[in-house]
Length: 114
Length: 111
Image (cartoon, rainbow over all chains, first blue to last red; front, side, top):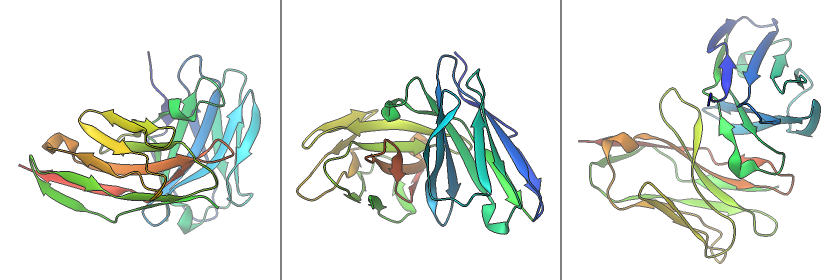
């Protein structure tokens, strides 16, 4: 069974640009969550999608957005990139919403903003 | 709001040494508690969990006991191996069903 797949693995952008990250959950999983990991802030929750609807949102500015498609794949978009957006972005999936202990994480997309 | 505090790393140990990584939490009620591990270049993996007070989670020789009196969930292992070198995250599930993580503790085990 394939795990959570995140693409691309590495990304380099410049300030002011926008970026889209992709996450394919494990087959059969309908809930997708996104986390930002930085050395200074650790892991912080961005948002959760279930059945194509955002169900939960962390404390991030509106430049961070996401969506989920009918096949449960999810994308995350960051507009007007800032240097502080450099981070490892992790996606996690679970079969249902209330199964946080059954979250499976991808290896992440490492975003560097220059 | 809810929060998790972990001891700062890095923690450097020799193989077969005893490991303790401290974790304390602040939360309303009695949240489920977790330890995740992140090996180099990989995502997080659930290591163990406990869902109520006095529960002991265990996996791969690691243990942690949910202590509501001290609001703690310290991770222990009796004899670490080089392959245990990784970053360890303590986390809780908040009332909105999302995970709140500690800052992570890097463990380096030397032969």
